[in-house]
Amino acid sequence: MTQNFQTSRFVALSFVAASFLTTSSVVAQEPEGVDQLEDWQQEELVSLMEQTRQTVSEPSSGPAPFELGEFAYQIATDGDAYVAYTLTIDPSKISTPTVALYLFLLDPAALAALSTAENEDSDEAPELPEAVFEDYGFIDVASGGTEPIQISRAFTAPGGEYEAFIAIRDSNGGEEVEDEAVPSVSMALRQRVSVPDFWNGTLQTSTVIFPKVDETSGELQLEQLRIPLTPEQLLLSPYTIGGVYRIDPKFGRVFSKEDELFLMYVVYNPGSQDGSMPDLQIEYNFYQQATDGEVLVNDDGEEVEEKYFNQTQPQEYNAETIPIGFDLSLGHTLPVTQAVPLRNFPTGGFRLEIKLIDNAGSTELINDIMFTVEEA
Image (cartoon, rainbow, N blue to C red; front, top):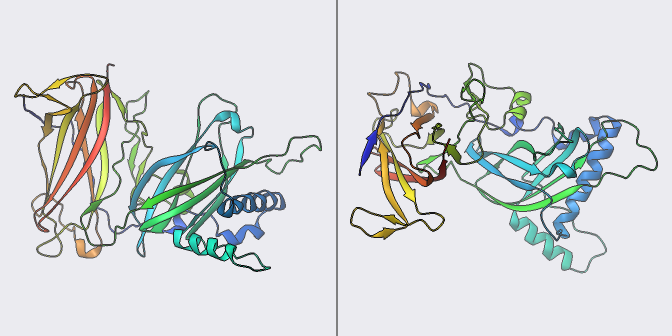
């Protein structure tokens, strides 16, 4: 049966002027500033960088030493995208409360040229291609526990495909190491990453993010800031949207029937008939998925892999609903939130279809979100 329902609450979020995130918002220092660090920091980082760069021509084999994922994309400046990511590490592989981290991105075309140069007869080793992006730092972690260690950072790059090289090692924090101590071993990972192009003029959205809910207070871990975060603050909250919506994200897509499905994202490049106001309609359609051998039957009595479950009332973003002062020509972006209670959802898997209908641009965009509902 078709069900329509209203969301349980409305979260008022103002539009954002072009508070785009830049490379300087991600990196505490430029990579060439390593020589300005303390001696022990230089020693650890230079060693880590050298080992990481070796994986460019000597890829490691075997299972990945840690996971690189939970990517969240949004627009940056100068044709770039801002990409938040999270490393998930087995706690048994980290023995110190601080780790050293190094990341750099390379263009696959540059890698191919490097491979060609290595195969040519020459007494000199070819130079490493210039990195699209580099980042390094010392990060405090909760070592000694049983839960996976997670480290969240971010990088910026133009839209395209890249090879990411990232490495981690225990940091001694400047303390002297006994001669018989086992030296720290770095863990290096090489992984292909895709970065969207938000600057091509087509209707797009940032990654849909689900904020965590505080277990004690029940409050969403989402804060609208009056002043954009500084680069140092952004390092601690890389999933912040537009520099002014600080979010502690929920990575898993499993929810309880007592939960509310709250999400947030930003719309980019909507059409406009007057150059300042968009004319958008956004639908949220839920489809129940057949999982674990479950048989779903549609209204015609046919077995199907998924079937329509329900939908919300469409959201309208136009001159009648958007606050006065919004102007696409000034670089304003459109943050969107939605909150749906799950108490009437059956347990099992679902696909949320977010459908953006751009009436001014005569185009549509569909984002699919998979999630699971469990008993409380």
